[in-house]
Amino acid sequence: TNGALELTINALSKQLKELREMLKSAPYARSSTKIDLQFLNSFEKGKTTIRSLSAIIGLCQRSGTSKLDPRAELMWFLALDCLVKAKSDSAKSPAESSAMINVVDMLLQRLFEGMTGYVALPTIVMKVLSEYGQACLSEFREMIMSMLKACSIEEHKHQTAALIL
Image 1 (tube, rainbow, N blue to C red):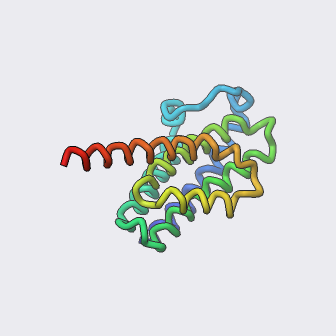
Image 2: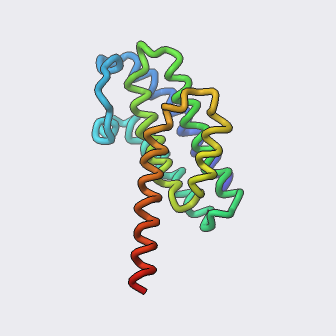
Image 3: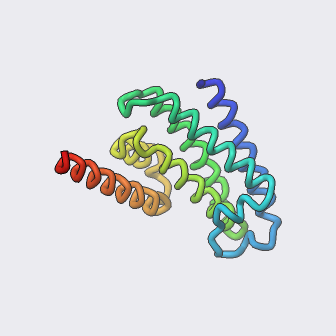
């Protein structure tokens, strides 16, 4: 599975570079409009990027059934590193990159949603703080807040189920 994951992450990295080049030259590249999944699915490079990320999430989810599995966590964090690198590379030329940053933010959100239930939230937060602390943490604020909200909802469901039982 690690071999398949590595190949898929390499493919995703290449696709993100191609997507960045494509978006750089497009008229909406300088737009501050958020790019959504429907927009990304409207062209082939966007579709293949989404498929690659979905494959990565599936591989990671099938590889680790326990939140205590360090190998599974490593797999998730390899995928996270790939997306953060793409975001960092895009942020180097802000005048051309708002569209690509929006794309990577959306992909990061999907990855974090996929991690929920497979990697403990404190582990994710520690990774973000230790590995990407030098970057502007506000980039991760929205994603971490949505994960906290999802965890809060899950905890509420568990408490309600425990009361019912």
